[in-house]
Image (tube, rainbow, N blue to C red; front, side):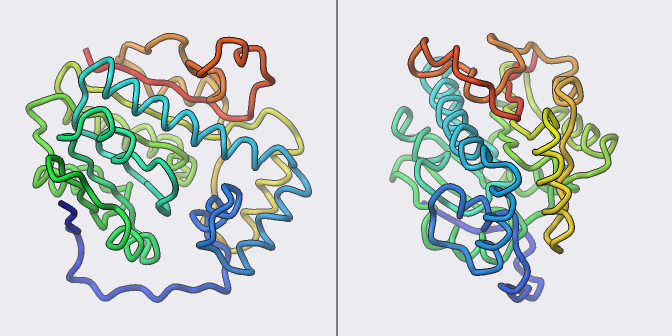
Length: 270
């Protein structure tokens, strides 16, 4: 079953294809087709300055799949709140989780009209489970949880997924507050999954500065310690706060691969 809830009473914002959009650029880097010439131009310019970005996008996607599968298969998590989901692509959260647990319930959160239209069409569920989409802003975590309660039972463990979204909250104190307010709704045995970009090279910093000047929603690169601080008070599961390609790779020899410029971790609510 799939439903769409949230701020559906507001008029739909028109999709402006003349201005690059982060979700569409990310889709372009992942080889998707839901993007436009403005996104191609911004994406290619980013790659010209920082050629490793396409690899980073793929590695973050790989981390997403491994973390979802790990929580569903090894920790019995059957409820996922995916905040800032972006455009649907291959191996979305519900697809990965429901392969392991067909009764899994997944709530996606975004506030982009293009993402919403694709969610209606593509985010289907198994008969045993449920998939919902919430039209809401990451800056209002209490509103997100209130709407998610229509689908998820917060008296039981929930995994909150926040991949590539916290950098769009450019004020660090606000970003931490959002995370803490979301975690405050979770019972022990719940999980927090985060992956976000870091400033580890001048090329990445220059590419991001150019991107932020395009008119797209700005994104702030952070220090690894700042990303680690999002997990304050939680038990960080091994291997800790690491590059996403170093987080439980499918083959141990991949641990020696060069680190991509992002940090990822999974934390348990105690």
